[in-house]
Length: 630
Image 1: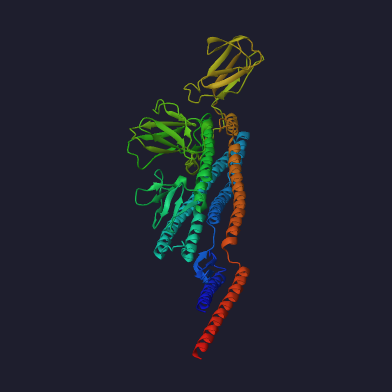
Image 2 (image 1 turned 90 degrees about the horizontal axis):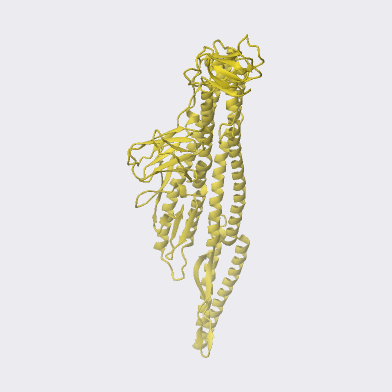
């Protein structure tokens, strides 16, 4: 009877604990991150009774938290992927809207600028056409500036996201380390069961951490968990956590770097971080924002540099040589704050067609200079020695190094980033638009042959004899002299270069025929340089002479649009992966009310049966006592 009573009591206590666990599951059915719990029941050891073994009841072990670490890890990976794509997509959408919108984009302003120049070419003496052109030029400069300022706003948004994510990651690391400390303090039981509520809290923190950055975890035998970010950098180790801090770039204060700050020196981890909201913001800055800003700067550089060069080939309505229409900021070379040497770097554009929409890092290794792209890290070959007479040449840039560099010194080269915001209009007088060519060519009225000469095109505006009069006289139909000197063979249509002007003579000249190249005094109706300006900005300027400015603008807008669409598609796909991972984990740890109701009914029935067992044992014991009293 004592055995029956002991068995009944063990069953009663075990079912009571099981009912409590089930009740707790039901109470937390809607609690976010709660993992359902089960009481571990096991048969007690049997006792020998004579030649037989008799059971002694049930043993209620610890409360086991139901879950699956593999599924939980998959959920964290899926969450990091989705939030990375979601952050990237939201930032990319703002950039796409900026460039593609007809009111804020660049294409319409550039086209209006070209149309206004065409009107000047159609009527070069028209003051109103010239005034409209200057107005459109001013609007184009303003559009570059407004886009640049909007890019600054987007960059500020990225910086705010980076700063906020880093601060929250640090806070989560501190809380995870504190939970590790509480788990250690609770003591690890023999069966390895840990406090389920603390584990749930820790999992919730890890899940939120995965929404911010890709994480890896490693469970330790003492119940703590280590957390790693980036390429294995330690955020949490046992009860200690590191700080994820944000500092200014060693090259420029407007850009932020992420460092891991622990007991030792700061470790820059910006390029190692991936996934989550922080990874999405960093990837957007590196993969889309920086290339877009550089692409815009390359377009502005191509437009302004080409126009200025061609403007200098002509003369304005005042008869003066053309001057620059645009002020173009030069490339920048920023020295790292930690540089120990005294070296300085000067950069200039050497070849528009070779310019790349990227940044570079110039590093001195103690023996030589090395150039690498910052977006891909790829090495860039350089020619030259880096002196003023023999500069380094790479990707359309000329790089001159002066002073003494120390090993490890670095310089960030921004070839075109600063151009959109620094572009300025220099001309304010419509008469200063150089629509006319500085020289003209004419045939003498007394010529008897059928030859004709072209109007002439300036090929070297710096020639000191550009405006000097030169006379071509034919000695016979196949030979000519220049200003009475020489005897040159005549080929119809061939280039004849004199004092920086190039002409072509066609037809059949007669002996004594003369053709004069002279200053274009009073050429108010001349539109040759205006036409050259139109041809210049409509020709291949970029990408080795294969891309026009309009091509470059269209490609920039298209690239951003395609990348935005790709990211949106990736976000949608990641959303499905995330939902599937969440459902799979919830199928293991989530509370099923139907299942819990069934368990409660089952435990209740067993509890009642156990109570009946105790009652029977009590009755038998009472009967035995009554028998012994008689």
